[in-house]
Amino acid sequence: MRDEELLTVVEVMARLKLGRSTVYDLIRSRRLPSITIGRCRRIPAWALSDYISHELEAAA
Image (tube, rainbow, N blue to C red; front, side, top):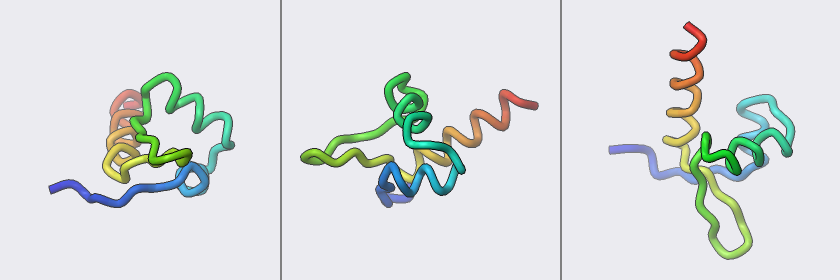
């Protein structure tokens, strides 16, 4: 079962050491899945892990 934790954009920024616009670009391009709850954007922790794994495989 995948982790159910939802991360904020700020948390993803901190984990990836990226700026806000870059994280939103990843979301907009659908490279990083997210959901909207009310006016808040949330990224499932599993989506971030999948994104990192995919990028590491592509770089190898």
